[in-house]
Image 1 (tube, rainbow, N blue to C red):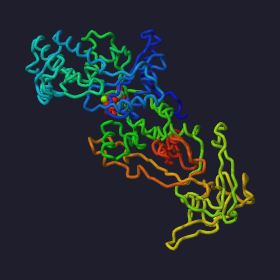
Image 2 (image 1 turned 180 degrees about the horizontal axis):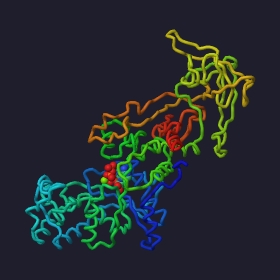
Image 3 (image 1 turned 90 degrees about the horizontal axis):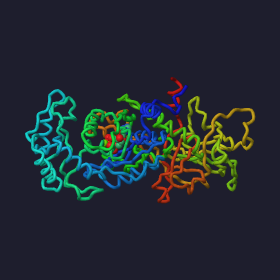
Image 4 (image 1 turned 90 degrees about the vertical axis):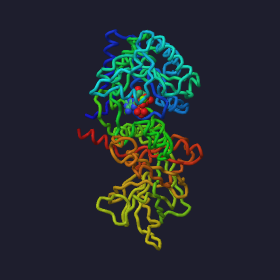
Length: 559
Ligand code: ATP
Ligand code: MG
């Protein structure tokens, strides 16, 4: 049947299970290593669920380590947001939060170690020259003229780099590996660059910063990580990762395992590009509900459980290039909210209906369940008065054949209440519909009308008691499946101009005073969540999380 089971393939989990069963590893240690240069997105969620999930499953631990080797692009605000997102997803890192910068001292000592062993040298070539000397995929590189410096000279220069005697770009420290290697990563990779920048953790202590490659594997080793899980683009770096572990006196040798990154259609998963959307003011910050960031999804109304469920559904493989259908993500949140979100009625495009046979002072309160299948959600009160609002989309003056909602002379049931008939359409001078005059059949509460069938049920709200609400209808931010395909800023051309439509709606009285991050189903309309920020300012703003129609479930049924 459907793929909706919880176990999509996960080759890393299978592999670790085999190792555990065979007694090859006792306690597993994984890590999630973000660079604090942006907010986390749904792709990171995949990595978080994988790393923390494995630690949970096999009784090990997962570290949260900031790979903070690039002070120019990093900020404390990102560190705070990342910690909040990981915790919100429901994961607890083992021990304190760690920073690669905690290991700068050790890394420097190891750099000196390589120099002493004749395996690293200070190079005076400029960045452009280094690139040129490196060669290409088809041509070997050439050795730098500075490659054969003596150990003593290298040690002296490295130390002077560290204390800030040289300008940025004047010198670098490189590993001495193999300029002819078919793997370009092994052609004397850069270990240290000069940067006269303040670092968010180490302040002005360092004038040189280690490269990502020189930092990452050794940090894993220092922390006793057993499985260093990363995305496929690091596969070509693995020989270098291992070269460092083999050539340094590290306390243990973690193993790098690569998996395919998540690519989601209609969605960008690149921090750099997401940052551009924020910086250009195209979205309302990193947590705009249209952003695929974890905080944006949270503000949109996603639950942690739905994101974890989605990550389980997509599985973990090495097959690259696939595009996951965003319908699957919508399916995951819909399934959660179907079971867990209380119901409410809210009219998005209000059309006034006067119930002509209801007296002006009439007030009748219906008690209806908060959720059709959840007694624990209690009852809610729906007052019916002479004037009510219905959704303009539920009325058509000249309806097509299968329109089972309201039309002149036609009947429809008000959800949880009576059947009404539309007797008259009231228009203004411009010919626009101002109101409908309808009459109630009082003999239809909880039962079918005599001698006829009324198929349609519509939602409604008492005009006297309804509360005004702002409703934000969100849709995909991009109109094309792969906005990320072209280089650089081309993705801006594919923005969906209708990704946000704001409406002034009217909700049932119970919506007054709901707290921030309340998730609800507006019956017949979709799932909504109160906006965290607006709610705190005392405004009733509902973000649409997702509509009711489940295209993923349909796709599954067809298979
Ligand atoms: P971006 O390209 O968005 O900047 P990144 O890989 O540079 O992402 P990091 O902060 O270095 O961002 O990522 C932390 C971890 O998350 C890494 O282990 C990385 O492999 C993983 N990760 C990032 N993007 C994805 C993705 N789309 N799918 C799965 N894992 C991802
Ligand atoms: Mg990165």
